[in-house]
Length: 132
Image (tube, rainbow, N blue to C red; front, side, top):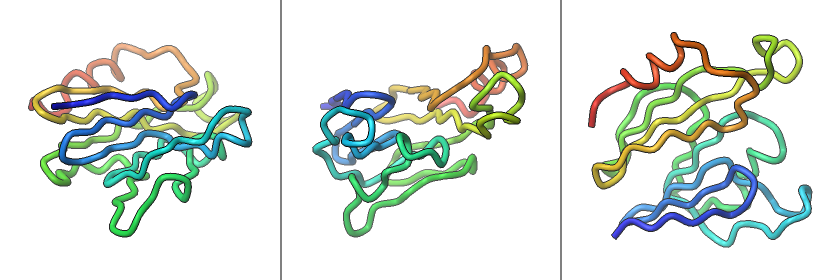
């Protein structure tokens, strides 16, 4: 059975036989509890302290994903889509990765720390990136 748990901010835990964690934080630096989970797969949307605290959730053998390459890890289909962390094409705060992934025939779209409205081209890419 698929379980979804929110650990605050942009950090989610999606679990079946595999545990996937998105944008881990350490809790302390943003004033909330740290995630109490270890991930088999850890998705990091960008390299800011409140989204990239891999050490808070990793274990031996964790697969840390920080790019847009399409892949399949333990029957989890994952693809990243480039986006920005601000409305100025990343000039202020850099890039962001939107992750689309499928577990147990359910497709998720984690926006990371998206800083702009999605344009039609990006929406088309999100919708067209592999069909589970």
